[in-house]
Length: 101
Length: 163
Image (cartoon, rainbow over the protein chains, first blue to last red):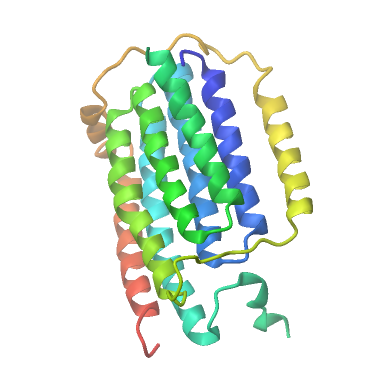
């Protein structure tokens, strides 16, 4: 717990699991969950470097803004997902390809 | 003791995030995501970030997670307790993600970070964050307020019945 690497490994694992969720899930809400995992991984890194390397609060500020962005992103994305559901009756992103035709 | 708690939280985060990524039941995934968010809040406490730990619980568990649950409830026929979800291209995705993880770890771990074993002593971060928000980060703070207003109006407009 007093070494930077334990936090970096945790963050890398969290990022990888989030990336796997984003690339393999078909459900749009599940993909949003993957995005949240990735943002959390980035936050852990910012705060860990803030404690162990830079020794100031700049990393904390960056994390505050990331959390704020995540909240805004979740609200807008869910509004889009609701519209997709009203239009199609499902929210599978691999079938939402009307622009391709 | 603190060491033991740290590794318990560490394992909780990895296990619940794995359930989010690999689980078949969407509701289980959302509740596992709550475990991840609470675990990350615990990690923030170990990292001396008291303000961020509380913000994490308030915004993620109290806000984003509730939004996600609403998203699931409004976009599925709730006739059975089991709301399944499926994945595509699992093998290829796993290969790519393991490759990305290997690249990250080989890039990050061998590097000798300055002070990687010299943590900063605990100080109260709330007043420091407040001061920085209204001095060095003032423009970002104002842009963030405009962005939140835009997101609020945009989400409300998009979610209306007649667009």
